[in-house]
Structures are given as structure tokens and as C-alpha cells.
Amino acid sequence: MVFPAKQSAGEMGNKSLFWFRQDLRLCDNPALFDAVQAAPGKTLLVYIFAPQEEAPWQPSGASLVWLHHSLKALQSDLAARGAKLHIFKTGTKERFQSSREVLEFLCSKLEIGSVFWNRRYEPAVIARDTNIKAALKEQGFEVETSNGALLNEPWQIKTKEGKPFQVFTPFWKACLSQMDLDPPLAIPDLKLENYGVLDGECSLDDLNLLPTIAWDKSIVEAYTPGEKKAQALLLEFLKKKVASYHHDRDLPHLVGVSRLSPYLHFGEISARTIWYQTKEFCEQNKKVAEEAAHFLRELGWREFSHHLLFHFPTTTDAPLRKDFLHFPWQSDDVFLKAWQKGQTGYPIVDAGMRELWQTGIMHNRVRMITASFLVKHLLQPWQEGAKWFWDTLVDADLAQNTLGWQWSAGCGADAAPYFRIFNPMLQGGKFDPDGLYVKQYVPELRNLPTKYIHAPWEAPPMVLASCGITLGETYPHPIVDHGKARERALAAFQSLKATSTRA
Image (tube, rainbow, N blue to C red; front, side, top):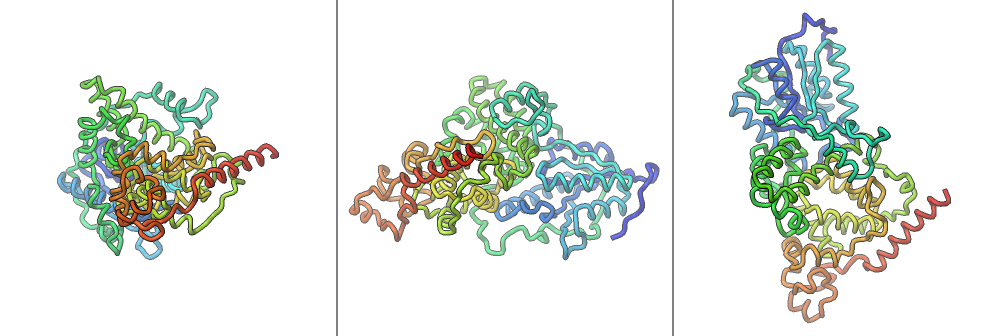
């Protein structure tokens, strides 16, 4: 495709283009606001589906389902304000090969003068965006980018030595000491010029984001993507749940958390909006301020994950701690598949993996338990767990997924110590004492007395029989013995320490 030569400032158009990405909202959208301000009534709104440009971590599985419904909600919100979202699809068999081609074509054909987007921070996307920005500027177009995702840019927070942080607590203290946020932006005037149907434009259905086999039904039933729902969830959380957040967030049978993670990932609500609304709520309800601080700290972990990924971009696949390159993982497809399917014989682990498969989400406490089980009980490479979560989570976020798995494996920043090996029975008893979570997602155990719910193999044969349970048939025996698995994991970590010492 051939484009015009570089334009002079006088030849540039007076229209602007806003590129929607992971910021599928209208409120507090900095780059959208600036684009409309730059060309009132003449802003073109564009979404480009180009997953190949994010390889090897392109959106997949459950997250594509969310993306479909999020874009649908955005289209509706825009239409209600007299605006239209122009969707483009790229690929080897499409009209356009890349996002850059789409943007260059639109800018030249429609006499666009300036292009706006909110920054993303994944390594492949940074490289892609840098290339596009340079190409557009070379052709004479103005390009402006904004921070629409984080409270602080990843490069803003530094140690006293000017280096990136690798421990969360001092990182978050530094963030809090420097926090100087502008208030969230209002929705700009979106009564925009009608550009009609553009060359190469496609429909939302043309993106083929939904599965051909309807495995997504339970995901759709569990969530309502979109900006309106995100705002409603935040308000509901602050009014009904924040007061007991610190306690309830660890109980998987309760919805004691905000459930805003997928909305944050797709940018249906901004971190700044959550920060400001939570602070305002605390001003009016001072007794919940301490609990709210625990909630906002979770935003801090999100910030920390992006900080780490920006400064250590290879950690999506390689351990931050280089000694872990020599860790004696024992790859085993049988173990991996049993874990993926929720057939390990450990009820709290199986409940978590089945919740993930059925709903596209997993309770955060259970994420830690299941991740620890994979890398320590089964000695499977943490990268395999990261890939599975990436495919099955609706809130699959590269920075947070990477941080979580490296933390569980002990090979990342602020990682769990090697000797912390969660006991699934004790974890289940502590956080699901009545077995309500297990019984919801492992229904074959629903009639088992509570005292045996987290260790069904300890139940007498007559009890199992009366509950219709035959271990090895209706529910599996544990695929590993906890005590032996723990000893094996400790030995593996000790061997790593010995190797590091010799090196």
C-alpha cells in the first residue's frame, strides 16, 4: 500500500483520530479527551484488532469473549451520544496488514492532522507503538499519547539510587509519597462528524471473537462487561463490601472483593477513578478508611506489576532471579492436565481450577493455592501455569500474570520464600472452613461431611459410600502425597541453592 509523501504543517488536516485500545470507556479517558479538544466535532474513533502484533502474548480464549462484549457495550455508549466506533481487522488475509497501515491510510484519506492514544506497557506493544509513532511523525502527522491506565508511569517511581524497585512495600510507600493525581476527566462532547462506512472497516462480528462452540455461556452469565457495569460495581463495593474487605477478601465462597480486575484490564474504568471515588467515599465514611487502604493497596500491586514488566521485559518467560534458570523442573503432561482440569484429588485446588474454566475468573486466594500446588507439589514449570491462566482468565493481564507466577515459583521480585509450600488441606480449612466453595465447584463432594471436605481420602469407606463417592472413580485419589511432594520440592530448592553457591 502506497501513502503520500511527508506532509508539511500547512498541508495537515484539521481532524483528529483517537485509537481505542485497552481503554474501552468514555469517562476519564485522557487521550480521547485531548483528541476531541484538538478537533471539536471532527474526531474519528477507531478500534483496530491486530492480535498478531502482541505475539506471543496476544489475547486469547476467555479474554476474547470479554473483548467482544466490551466493544459491544462501547458501541452502544457511543451511539447514545451520537458517535460511531470504526472497527478494523488486520492480518495476512485482510485489507490491512497492520495497525500502522490502518492509521496511515485513515490519516491520509481523511486529512487527519493529529493522532491520539493511551499508552500500553507490554514489551511487544511498546515496540509496535514506538514504530507507529515514528512513522506517523515522519509523514507529518502529530501524535500525542497519554497515561490512561496507571496511577504513575512505570518509570516515575525509582529507588534512591535511581533504579527500579524489586520489593513491593518500599515501592508502594514511594508511590504514596509522590501521589499527585489530577481529578478524573469528564466525558467529552461526542457529537461528532459522520464519516460513514470507511474502506476496510468491518463489523464487530467480523472479528470472530466468540467461540464457535458455546463454552462461554457461564462467563457471559457471570459478568456484564462495559463501563456502566464497572461504575456500578465500584459503587456497590464501596457501599456494601469495603467495610469488611480485609477479612472477606480471603474467603472464596463470598464475593467480598470488587471484581473489577477485568474492567481495569480492558480499561472500562480507570485506576484514577477508583482511587478518587474510594478516597471521596472515605471522606464521607471515615470509619472505613483503614479497610479502604487495603483495597487501594491492591491497586498498588497492579502498579508494581507494570513497573516490573517495563523494567524487566524478559520476565514474561524468563525468571527475574537468574539462578532459577537451573531449577530442576520435572515437566509431566499427566500432572499438568490433571491440574488444568481440576482433577488433582485436592478439593480446594480442583475447585479453583474448575471455577477458572467455568467462569473465566478465580478467587485471588485460590490463585495462590493452585499456583503453589503446580510449581511446588508437582514441580511443573511456572511458565506452563502462566500460559494456562493467560488462555482461561477474562482478566488475563500480562504484567500481573507474570508477577503472580514468578512470585509463586519464588523466582521473581518480592517472591514467596522457597520453604513456603501451601498445605492444600490447611489452606482449605482456613479459607473455606465449611467447604461451601468446594461444594459449589466440585459437586461430586457436596454430600461429604465438612470434616472431610478438604481431605476426602481420610473419610471412612462407609461415609464415602453413603455420599456416593468412590475415590478413583467419581473423584480422583490425590495425584501426589502432600508430605512427599513437600520434601521433593524442598530438595529441589536446596539443590538450586547449592548450585548457586558453587557458581
